[in-house]
Length: 341
Image 1 (tube, helix red, strand yellow):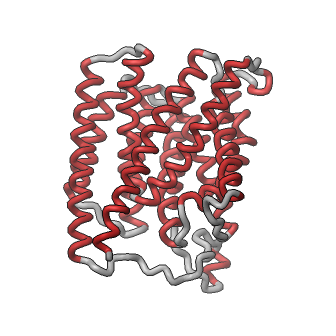
Image 2 (tube, rainbow, N blue to C red):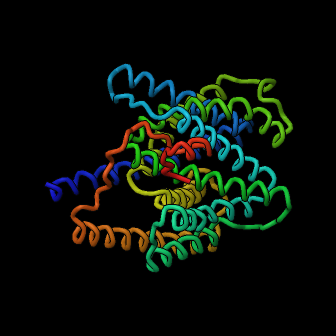
């Protein structure tokens, strides 16, 4: 029976990966047109609108019985939502206070930090082959996307905070779904309002720091509004596929996929938007593709070995679904089990 289930599971993973790549590349192109061509530079505020539209879309889907709502411990959901919202804010601030090259370095650093955190706190093992493939991937993306490196204290500190909050948020996205046996849709539905709230409050301030412009004083033409609406609709698929991919695979695999998107965006930017493209970009993309291919090959081989030699490798989830993952010292003293650091 397990054997018959494997192709369906693989098909679901492939579908999730395809949806993530297609929606992410689409939203980058849409947002580039919105910000570069139409002069709407308010990225953090726009993200809060993305999350609000995502929540409203999922609420309609819930009413139409497309999925069932599953209660999750409220403290876990609130802290998880706020953490993810803060990580988006830090990433945008990192981009604002650093050069493009250093910002790309920040994004590249998320993979090794995620591997480190999962190894230390979740005792997850990564083979030497996996580490080698990730190294090749990072070298390729670095060659393709990093141009200049300008360091400053504030920018470096913000980048470090962005890396830490992003890594922890993505690890929790995977861990909550597996430990509490909730779907990506259920987790996104419950956490999106809190992510949207923190960005809706902080977004205008962050954008004003970065652009010296007020989002509420901006003149909204019909074309700008149309692109904002399109961006929000695409974001529903981006947010859904993000949770889906991390839940079905792992935070590291999601980051590998993110670098595939970077390569595709560079290629689309050259073909559709006529962005500058050099031999260095081409070499970097080719090296990154080799790294992604190796990562996929080694992951598939290791997964087959685990399935063949470990019949009972499925995690036993017999605990209460509402057990909080994020608890206080007082909870620990009362004997409440903490699943995630």
